Image 1: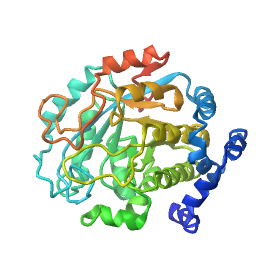
Image 2: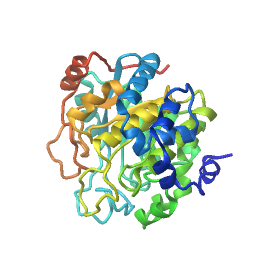
Image 3: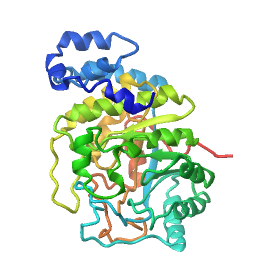
Image 4: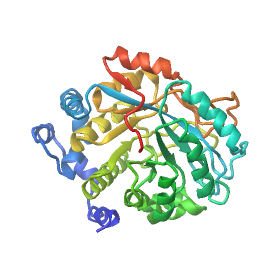
Length: 368
């Protein structure tokens, strides 16, 4: 049974009615349990649970310390290219948006890598737009080989690929895959992706599983919060997706990211506003539902919020971030995908992490 089959089991669930019916006693019952069912997890996403965040936070903190200790893994994104063939209405890389398009050459990539490596970081996430004819699998593989000279862990956040393509990149040095479904609402997904290869909902939905089958060490899933009118729906299905992958592929480290909409080139407005309190509630619920899943909070969020979320289940954060192609060695932000909220350098992030009593981790993986 694939994940789409699991999703279909909830087609008849009236989520709004379920959330509205949850009481404080229901939340207390869930908090008393060691292992949660999917509907227990949904209970922790309810409005009733929002009023009990202190008790939920205490349990999430205890679980995080037991499984991860007081550590925060650091990484930074590196944009290889921003060419795209999609028209995702919420994205700055939308092919109809008039932005400067570029792609790094091998020499430019090496310059970027040297600048990032000088900060001490050993984990990197490389990104491209969805343009397989321009940012080919071979191009991404060649870039990965160069980056392997500087970094011990290389993850990709690119277009959905076949298992064979993921296997090729794994041989080139890639050990991690991040791919967001954006929204698990199929009809909404098709509205948001009117043209381009990303419009294939099912191919993208199964991409994380293909990554697991290809031998990726880490697979990270998520949804872009704000696309759905009821934010709990995508949050719920993201948790189910991670739980499905954890259960089926125990040798793979499964992780979750809960990104929220950020300003970008284009006029798309979110369908719902996910507040800071909502985001905290979501991360706490994810930690209690999935004890040893990695959780990343990116620089889409403010410095103050990120600092305050460190004890609440977060295990990974980005630092020294730019969303522009070549942005680590250039001040030109005209190729940026979206605006960031936390511009702190790696050194500044390390000091912030240490001030909260946590240890910044630059490296936790060494390939043979």
